[in-house]
Amino acid sequence: MSSETDQGPDSQVKSRSKKTRDRNQAALRGLTELAADTAACVRFFSRLSLPAVNALDNPMAPPDFVRIARAAPLAGAIIALPAAGVGVALGFTQLPLLVVAILLTAVLAATTGALHEDGLSDVADGFFGGATRERRLDIMKDSRIGAFGALAMMISLLLRVALLAALWQRFDPADAALLFLAGEAFSRTLLVWQWQCLPSARPGGLGAHFGKPSRKTVLQAFLVTLPLLLPAALLLSLPALLLTVLVAFSAAYATGRLALSKIGGTTGDVLGAVQQLSGLGFLTGMLMVP
Image 1 (spheres, helix red, strand yellow):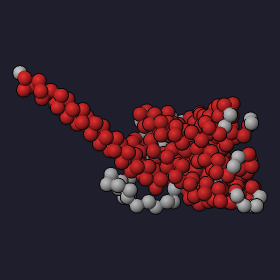
Image 2 (cartoon, rainbow, N blue to C red; image 1 turned 90 degrees about the horizontal axis):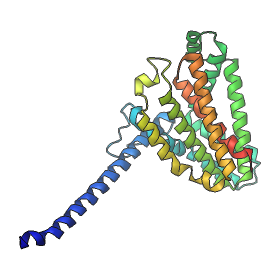
Image 3 (cartoon, rainbow, N blue to C red; image 1 turned 180 degrees about the vertical axis):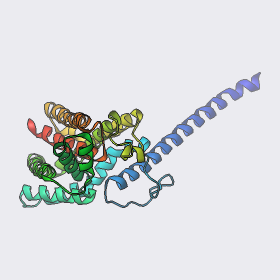
Image 4 (cartoon, one colour; image 1 turned 60 degrees about the vertical axis):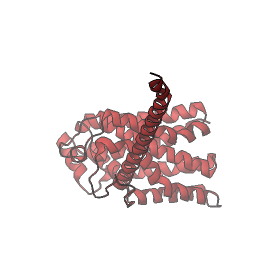
């Protein structure tokens, strides 16, 4: 009995040590998986060609958005880093801020391959150029750009440039860049949210090929976004922060509702439009009040 009693504390220490080791291994595994998911999202949503970041990352494997969509916000911030860097560097020069905003927008479009801008353009052409659901979907598949698409892209780019110039005017270039990155991250979170909430308009579309985010994935995406929104929480007034989130959410929700009424759900183009319009909403909300 005495021997068993003496071994008790040692056994408890070993048990606690094993639990701590298991928790550390689980945390490391989780970070490794998140890094692999982020790399997959970066490759899908941009022209950036990343090598394998770890053993779990296979650049040749098709993306599984049931899981990896949780990393879309972090990928959005990474994709926007080159543009943010240009904004910081040129923001400290004597260049007019309008020029800085134009160059920042150009770098961002080059990095993404204008993926989401193309989606917005196709949505505008299809939604407002077709009279029936089938005709709208056919127009959206057409690679040619129509009047509605050209107009939507022009307005979107002009608005983005004007808002970014105003953002760089109101804030220090480094702070403005952090807010810009937060908007790019949050707009991808809202993209994932609408993707999960709405049915697919095409059975053979994006969701069918690569999977649809689950509710758990959406929740994880929002959790991943929280640290990326910290600059906005620190730099913006409470009214501005609330308006920023509200306008971005409203833009994403309205785009999703419009898609549901026009074509019965989402497509890859619709998700691109959600990202573009919610990103513009984020910038607009920040600048509506002091």
